[in-house]
Amino acid sequence: MADKYRAEYALLVDKLAARGVDVDKVKSRLKAQKIETPSWGFADSGTRFGPYKQPGSAVTIEEKIADAAQVNKFTGVAPTVAVHVLWDFPNGLEDADKLAAYAESLGVKIGAINPNVFQDRDYFFGSVTNEDPAVRKKAVAHMIDSVEIGKKLGSDILSLWFADGTDYPGQGDFRRRKHYAQEALKEVYNAMPANMRMVIEYKPFEPAFYHTDFGDWGMSYSFATKCGPNAHVLVDLGHHFIGQNIEHLVSFLIDEERLGGFHFNNHKYADDDLTVGSINPYELFLIYNELVKAEDKPNNNPPIAYMVDQAHVTKAKIDAMIQTIMHIQTAYAKAMCIDRKKLYDAQIGQDVVTAESCMQEAFNTDIEPLLKVVREEMGLDPNPLEAFRASGYWAKVSKERGIRTGAGVGA
Image (tube, rainbow, N blue to C red; front, side, top):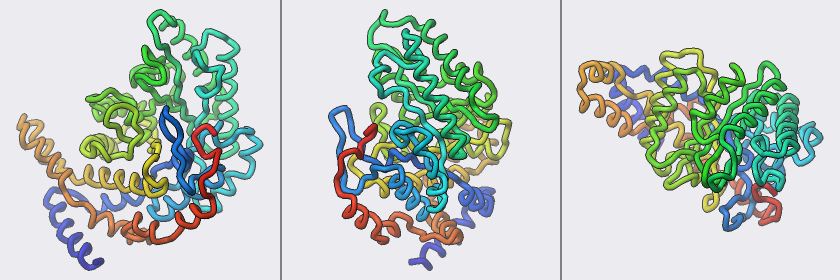
């Protein structure tokens, strides 16, 4: 089997060379790729109808990190784990004392710090946009505490998402709420150390159904620019209306030097939190096309944080996360296989068919032989998912952990 994909790889190298693709450069970038997994992606989750528990789902932050370490062990490109303060550190800094060393002992590090200003009953009518100044103060204090946890754990990303919004016309004043939010963000921003970056997420609806205070990328962009140079926009692929041209806004934010990071997932209808690339792999490819172009011609956009944010309800947790990483690697590799000169000439010559064909040719390229060779050169099994399943890890922890209360999101 190995001889087969190596022979296919040799043919692929020739094909890509004909397109002007530097295969060594492609391989180098794939080896340097870093994708952050979320601690909550290894715990039980569900829908508004209830949580769905699986045997083996992680409960403690130590279990979540151990599971994340398995993803990195078999993919080689997932060295950091995002954490959620309320779910992972119910006692704040006290819980964070030994965590960094524990993570490093398993070959990973703590990544983005995610405060929680949406779960408490106090936030029923909003957090940073609540009319009650005491609630706004509580939310700000929690985010500043999260900054301190990030400092202790060596994290340089503060990742913010707000459920703030209203369900009915007249329930709140848009402009007053906007000013509340900006005041809160600025206070948190001023509490961050110089090496920390704030990334601001957005969502058009849910849980609020009339309006959300951080409703789209433009609002997050405005909030970020008013905070300062270390505040940027976080793009969640599921947080858009159907038909939104995500690759366009990604390109726009890169040009504005405000693209801070991604939450990778996929959706069919709304914020479904499905495996990235499972519904629209062509969209993921087109997004990576913009990212590759930015790598080829960089500006002063900050380093982009590539993070996963998915809820694996029917899939086994680690299986789904490894599958996710592989989908991202595939999209990235294919985006590097576009014939750039041919595409440029077609664009300048206004040859629409040829320009589109350049994109489709790259997307339809079987890139698996190259990915397998890259993994081998990294000292990994060329088939990460199969290798993990054969390791017996999931069977072992499923038996040891079983189905337990307290494994769900927010538990």
